[in-house]
Length: 172
Image 1 (cartoon, one colour):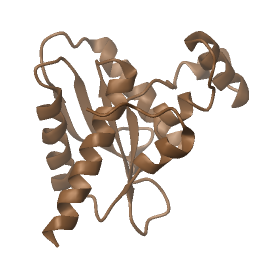
Image 2 (cartoon, helix red, strand yellow):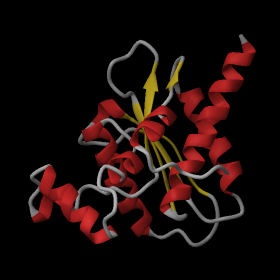
Image 3 (cartoon, helix red, strand yellow):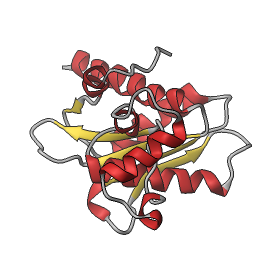
Image 4 (cartoon, helix red, strand yellow):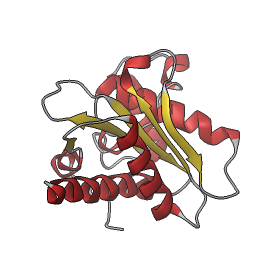
């Protein structure tokens, strides 16, 4: 796995667009993520963006023992961040460089005028990723990985997406 960048422009480049997105795409991406995660414990969730406040999950799995209900909370918070801001959670985290983790969270909440209760609905920890489609202005879905270190949660998605798009282009 490559190393997660911390430069915003480099992170944004990772947010590549797919030529299309269907439930088959979700299955293919989800199973690839699962293969990359094994044997480590992780939760993978892929959902559609047009289902707020309810979540329309099109792929979800746990890869190994060790995942708890708390991981579902992280998935929901990462998903909410991607849906609100349209960028990966790692991108949002790196908008606040040079700060300790708690300071980053406070600066994030302050910048976006979130009250104490609202700020707990969002997480700027790596592992939430927008699903973009060429020719579509808004994101169409969200991929979330939870359970690894946040840099790994982010980068495993970035690497898998890049590899998947490269294979799709080779099929043409």
